[in-house]
Each structure stands twice: as C-alpha cells, then as structure tokens.
Image (cartoon, rainbow, N blue to C red; front, side, top):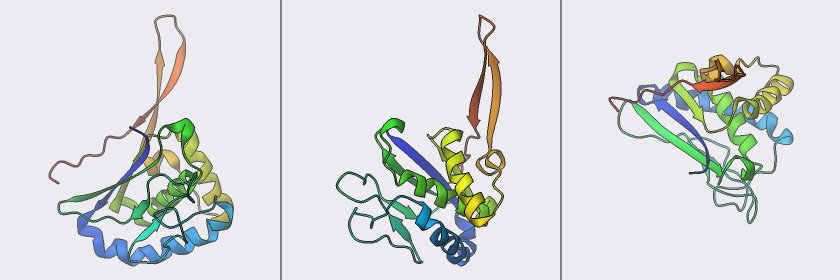
Amino acid sequence: MGHTHYWYLRTTGREAVEKRLGTILEDFARLLPHLPPLAGPDGTGGPVLYPPQIAFNGPAPDGDYESFRFPRWEEGKWSFGACKTGPDRESKRPYDLAVRTFLLLAKLHLGDLIRVASDAPLRDWAEAALLVESVLALPVDLYGLLEVRLLEVEDARGRRFLLERWKEVQTVGK
C-alpha cells in the first residue's frame, strides 16, 4: 500500500491551473530553504520547479521513493494524481513534507479546482500548514482545505476518541 497523498484536478480548469502554477511555484520557492533537500524525479540532479510540470523526489539512494509530478492530466471530469512517499507512515521519506506543502499551496491557490486526500493524519499536515503560515503569512484552515472532520466516538467502556474523517472524493463520471 504505502504512505500516499492523492489529488484530483478539475479537467475543465486546466487553463486556470496552468495560469496559477507560477504563483504556486513562487510560494514554494520561498519555502525551499525550510524543506528537506529535494532532487529530480529519479532521485538525482535538481528538482524540476518550472511549468508546465513540477517534478521532484528525495535524494537517492536513501531519501527517494516515488516521484511527485504536478499536474497530471487525464481525460474525464477529474485528473487523478498521487505520490507515495514511503512504504508506511513510519518509513516515509523526508521529502514527504515538501509534497504536503506543495499540495497545501496548490489548494490555497486553486480552490475548488483541486481536491486533496491523504493517508497521513491531520497532525502531519499541521507541520506543512505551520510552515506556510510562518514563512508566507498565509492563513491555512486544514479542516476546510482538506475537507477533514473530527468525529467524537465512544466505545463500550465509555472511553471517547476523536477520529479523522476525510471527505470521500467523488469522481463518478470521470
């Protein structure tokens, strides 16, 4: 399975996405000094941080896993993209923070043109949100941006727990 982040881009918004990609990259570039080292998509060389497609990974041989490529376009109403940053949450590679940060910036700048989902718990996303807020002074509402809700549940012994519930991304009619 793996530790994966997912996104869906509204295909009809392709022109708007491509137009705003430069702004997303400007913000991301300001955050690079605060992120783990990045490499090219194959884990060597430098990251590709210019339109029309962004591509990076962690540095090989130990920091790379699956390359992050944005945007990815497909036929249909929504274009699916995903990046697996490790075999599981405990073994995720350091560049996972860069992936989360980029996706938060994309959501901030693209709004309803993108939907983001993840295997990562909200507390992992909070690290990326704090970085965006502290360096760029952009307010980040994780619950709203990622469409996550906290549910309070009680077990048979009366113990209460908070569960994260990610909104299911509807891609019917792809």
